[in-house]
Every structure is written in structure tokens, then in C-alpha cells.
Image 1 (cartoon, rainbow, N blue to C red):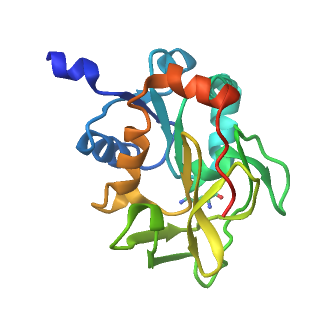
Image 2: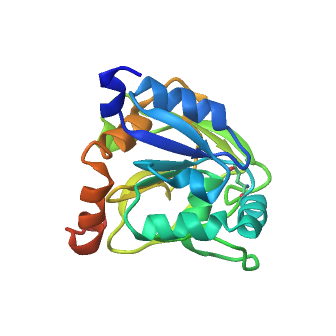
Length: 216
Ligand code: GLN
């Protein structure tokens, strides 16, 4: 390991299911070191965590039984930055609209609707304008995607599609309904990794007393 490696943020990718290697590639492209998280102790020493897409009920089941869900929740409560895509977004929501209860991590003051775009449009691609990232729009790959139905005052809307919130941020917590890891566009991964450069301790302070970002 070179000295340079020590200054690169270490990001875990929750490896229960989903596009794990694609997230690892995207994170490496924007200067992070990555490791896979399958057990609670693999969260030790991480500066941030990515929760990939997949099936949120499977996540809940597998990670719930192993205690990983509780461990991730504890870390996030303690200030660990997190980036959730698609099912990862669902896992980070404080609540689900419609449908039965399912195990979640929580941490973002959002209510999500699963498979929200309906059967006809179960999977589709669309240009998604993300004003915080400037031009051009991101190419959003939506796969049985959720949308964010309601967001609390601490949540900043990053993007909407067809009148629904599809990406949002609450300080160092970022979620999006589409799959940026499946395109070559690294801007959301870069936004996340750049937010880690201050380290988890700084993020921790921010989460305890910090400035809240107003709703848009
Ligand atoms: N439909 C899935 C769910 O409800 C999410 C799909 C995805 O992650 N691509 O959990």
C-alpha cells in the first residue's frame, strides 16, 4: 500500500446481493478504497457505506437474521455516511407507503413507495436532471424502482422524474432510485466520496448538532 492509499476514504459495499462489483468499480474510479461488507465486524474502520440495489425484502431478511441490519443502523446513527441506490434507498427510508411492514435500516426522513413506476414501466431509462451536478443530466436506469413520496425538512431533493423525487440528500446520506453504478457517470459516487474526505468524526459532529439543509 502506498502512502497515498492511506488518504483515500475506505468505503464498504454491502454485499448481501445486487450490483456490488459495479459499485466497487465506480467508487474506485472516484478515488475510494473499497471492501465488501457481509458481517457486522466488516463495518469496522469504514468511512462510508454503499447499499446497492436488489430486493429490499431479501436484504431485510438476510441482513436482519445475521444482525447486520442492526449493526448498520447503529453506525448510521453514529454518523457513518451512506449512499443507497434503489433497494438501498428503500432500506434507508424511515417509512414505506402502502404494502406491509418490512425490516428497514432507516436514517433518512423519507417515505418511499416500492415499485412505484408501475408494471408498464417496470424498467426504463430516462435523462434525469440533477441540478446540484450541473449539465448534462444523468442517464437514469430505473429497474422496478421506488420513488420518494414524502421527505422531511432535513432532506434536500436532488432530482425528480415525472413529478416524483428520485434522488435526495440529508447531509452525508445520499439516496437515488435509479442505478448510477450501471452507467459510466460517476458524479453521484464522487459527490458521496467527496463528502467523506472530512472523515466520519466530522460527519458525526455534523449529524449531532449540525446545520440542517432546507427542503426544496
Ligand atoms: N423493487 C425492488 C424493491 O422493492 C428494488 C429494485 C432495485 O433495487 N432495482 O426492493
